[in-house]
Image (cartoon, rainbow, N blue to C red; front, side):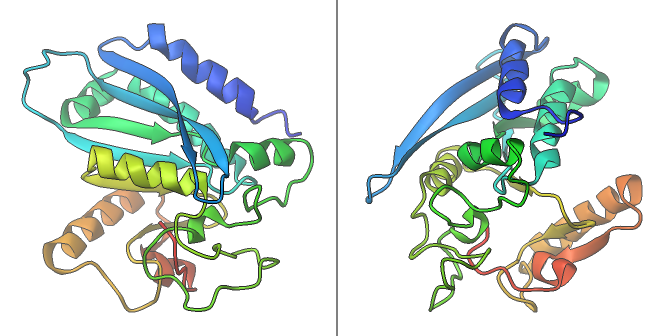
Length: 241
């Protein structure tokens, strides 16, 4: 294992420590379990961070972040830890962010296979049922699934996996204004849609998202490709989140 990365247990242990060390914010890390129709069950840790203020304060927008859908993308989960450390730093940036958004996070979306990747199976991408979680969502799926041996096999139906089902239910409950899925392996920042090139968010949504990409690229990633996911990564991603 590469010692410059934290392993899954270390990440979760470090995150758990913020339950009593997140000044100016309420921090909660709770296990959430889902079982599919096929009887597959999985528990993921879900983090909620919100500004510590009067419960009667004006409601804030919600943001949902998902990390580690692909087991081999170690830096994704390391980014989740860094994000929590930043939000709990009581810095001016943290205060500004938490004044605008309540944050929900899934820091490790594919924990079983992540542990196999940590043990040396560095090419692990899919989950324990050989399904690519980032092709297992319910919209714009392929009419005929790819063979299971394919690295982007999305399962026989959308939300067939407990991890994607947990993410779905979080989105339904939180109704986030912002949804961010964090991956590695490409030098890019992208917005919807990923399922096919040529499709972009309509009207002001597309304009606003493009402004976000422009600002992120300008400040943090000048050399990054940008656009819709399908355009930036240069291939279609049916069934992605």
